[in-house]
Image (cartoon, rainbow, N blue to C red; front, top):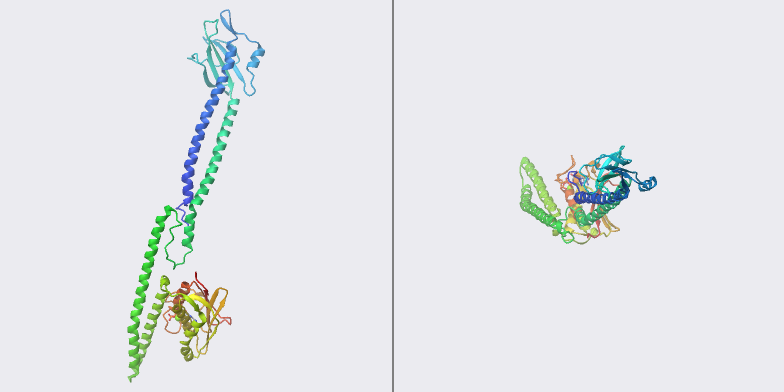
Length: 459
Ligand SMILES: Nc1ncnc2c1ncn2[C@@H]1O[C@H](COP(=O)(O)OP(=O)(O)OP(=O)(O)O)[C@@H](O)[C@H]1O
Ligand SMILES: [Mg+2]
């Protein structure tokens, strides 16, 4: 079977269509969930920064009309110690005069009473800053408190969220791939069965494909295929009938002509005229033979299955019947025509098997020189009935053994006036009976041995 790379497989197509959007949806969902999670985490960390602001604001006193921070270094230290992050603070008056802290950040403009959170950087490190305006009870003016915190905790948290989000998403993608793959395989099983059913068919089998096992979507294909098959069968049938009719119609006038020529030859006539009549007889015999062979071929062609009268046959009996008609010709050529037969049962059409045997014996006698021998054998082995026709004639050269089965093919320089249809007929009949045809050489190395293995019973 040829595989066209431009037509992707149904599996890949379905997988692509399902997985593409699925992955897209999953990534959008993950990114969305990630941002939501990060925002709420940021909010929580931001709110935590308000605690030290509150604590600082309670320790701001006024000295000489100026605000000062009144807090012990120990208290400050414990307020600004964190397991993960460094914390900094800055205290400033409303005029922007810094009066405490370890931080030097500009004071945000338009700072209202609500806390403000923003990102900044100190000494090259990214920090999150909370700024708030506070008015201590005994003061007229407000002070601005700013707390900055490095991002270690937040970054850690970010990675955690990422891991929590991405691991299940990836797992889901893998599960989806596996499920889709499994589903597609299951879904395609009926198609594969159908394919196997069609592939297993022989050329002769033009029966409709059963629709029952086919999935709904494939049914129209099968219906069309069946229509095609039945049209094809009808066309083959018509062609065959035409060929059979034409050959049959030709036979009667040719037989009449042959009789007339034979009658004429019994009369006295000038030598030249006799010669012409003799040539005429040969040509007429040849034409009649051709018509006969064509008729047999038409009967043995594929599609003829329904015309066959299949029955239980004994090869031995058939050989005895057929061989009787050839004894005379063998005698004339001094050919020793003999048989070695045992009962060999097969399921077949007696007329067609008779034609097959006759064509093989005809060839053997025709292509074996004077004083040769022809032996016809049959025997039964396991579930095979075997026919052998062996001669010690000119033989069929190895490279031509396929070719001689073709219609109208004759080996160059073959004697006699055959038309090249005999072995084609043999081959067709062999196929109709699901038998095996082998062309070989007899053990002593000269001549031809044709073997046909018939199955004892065709199912
Ligand atoms: N037993 C044989 N020995 C040698 N050559 C053979 C033998 N049988 C067939 N052949 C060769 O194979 C060719 C094809 O045989 P086939 O029986 O198909 O045609 P044919 O004998 O020429 O004509 P037809 O059988 O139609 O009268 C023959 O022309 C001959 O060359
Ligand atoms: Mg022949």
